Image 1 (spheres, rainbow, N blue to C red):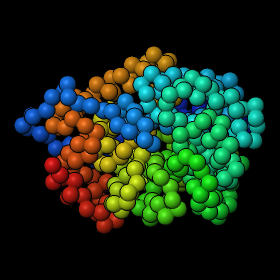
Image 2: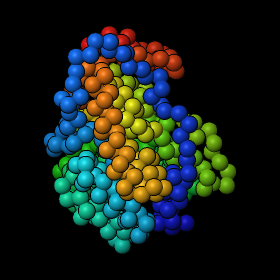
Image 3: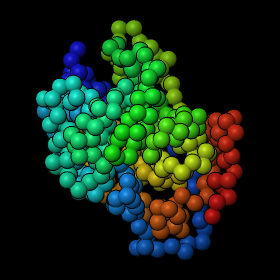
Amino acid sequence: MSREQRKHDHIQQAIQQEQTRSPFEDIQFIHQTLATSSFHRCQLETTFLHKSISLPLLINAMTGGGGKQTARINQQLAEVAQHFSIPMAVGSQMAAIKDQEQIHTYQIIRDTAPDIVCLANLGAEATPSDALRAIDMIEADGLQIHFNHIQELAMPEGDRDFSMRLRNLEAIVAKSPVPVIAKEVGFGMTKEAVKRLYEAGVHAVDVSGTGGTNFSQIENARRQLSLGFFNSWGVPTPIALLEARSLALPLPFIASGGITSSVDIAKALSLGASLVGMSGFFIKTLQNEGIDAVIASVTRMQEELRYMMTALNVHTVEELKNVPLIIKGETHHWLNERGIDTKAYASRS
């Protein structure tokens, strides 16, 4: 099967997947009885990679390298990013590095959205030379290096040797002219992994936990003999974020994986994310309802976030990171077993 056809299959499989529950159901805000806030003072503006963005939302890596279909998807997503002044990441650019005819499916993002923060994207098998080409291809402001060995193992034609990937990352960080962001692809991270990534010199980490697009299921659907045990593999997004935050490292964290609503965004920010990434939500809404529905949905989420901030007596994204909340259920159990204190979140003010 060609790489282009595989890109098309990935899109269709991602659209068909259904999310049964939010990974943030175990997170509950503590109601603030005495209201002292004002809706009209609530501000969602923040900065990312030293640039101003209108709200802490990232259109996360999805596609490219699949010909006209993926070019059209990226163009429309870039229109949304430009409209709201929010960052956008491209899908893996290895397809364009291997086949120059696919370059336009990525460059169309920068052509459409010249003012946004744009992130290049490659897998951890890439070389520094690959990284430089990917950055130049879209005039990127940053570079995502994704770690996806579970997807690769489930992929019939995927890689089986990952022994050089961390060294590749270190070499890319040393040569990259833009900040490097380490990213999972929906299987989450642990505090041990985040510590090692920090030591490798990355500038930010996208914990990308379970709960959203399941790439093991996507690849298993393409296998004759399924590796079904990988379909429930990984670390849920809020747990991955809290594990990362427990290290108290000077790193910004991006929360992604299963985030589909303004409530999920608010909870992720309150757990310490600097930015929230969404991909499945965007691709499904775009393909099923069109770009106008995407713009309407983001507009609604902006307003809903301001309503929640007002209810929580905060006016900025930074203040939202200090609101008290309760961590319940399986999330609490996991964190307790991992030696991470949850009571501190309940007593914040």
